[in-house]
Image (cartoon, rainbow, N blue to C red):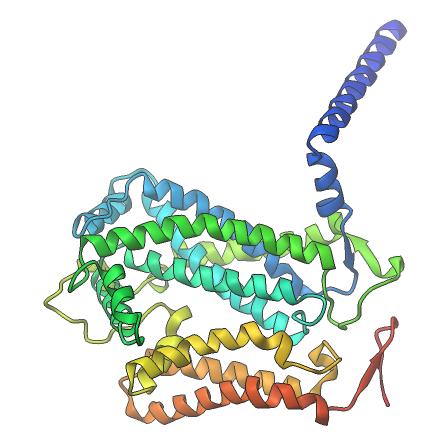
Length: 413
């Protein structure tokens, strides 16, 4: 019996040595295991990170889930007018579990945009755009724009009433751009009205952009790992006693948020499926019948609201694009040496009002037929631009300076 145990122990040790030898052999040629160990297991993270730092991991997992479900949907989708709508109906009614796969894809897109907005707000609130993290911020903004383009292209693909007329409205707005507008809208439309070429081009954009987004996410993570993560206090951590390894501490925290995200998706899919898309999109596209009210998905409502409150097409298009462009410039518009809004009272209040103004623009986009909301939307848009062009650059002059220490305390000078 003793000889048998010795033999088994010897065999186990030999197996372990073989695995370690293979790992060393592979790492010398392709350092996969060592990179995972360094960047995702032992990677140092500030120990004072709160729940706002979990949305990045949630976005990565949801993106992977949407890629899988999206590839499945492409196997049955037909990018031709009327056939597109029928192929969606077939996926919903005849393909085994097709309705579930499509619902996961739609719920994932809604949750992805919601978490992306929260992730963006966290960056603004805690100053994650300040030196040396300018490239982290800019790559994140490029990712945001890419996701918006992909989401809009995906919204067109069912070729329902709202899809058709949303494509028509946006392309007409693009045509108002001086010099290049007509050529660009003609390329997107492929004719006088949305047609087979329009649908095919949006389908191509949606499919290709999904993989471009994956590449941008990869670059975003590289930039973040190079300069390390920001933290709620806005202090650059230098002491090892103030950091913890990513695994298992932050993996557990991310796992909790992923569990809650999964619960939200279950509620949306099984209990509130009507929230995932507009009911008009369950009607085949009809070029001869305009819907009573054309409105995009909730995550585009603020930008659609800007188009509605500005009487000139190009003016609305320019101001809508400007709201995104200003976010790219935030690292250079904010001159305050203090990062976190915890210690910037003027900026903190201004940022909260900015969120209210952004939500108000969304309400205007949803209920744009009410004339009483037009001026409220214009005031919200005016404040949005004032926040970035006036309040943000000047706030550092009026705020009380704060000196932050490793003890995470703020002493007024």
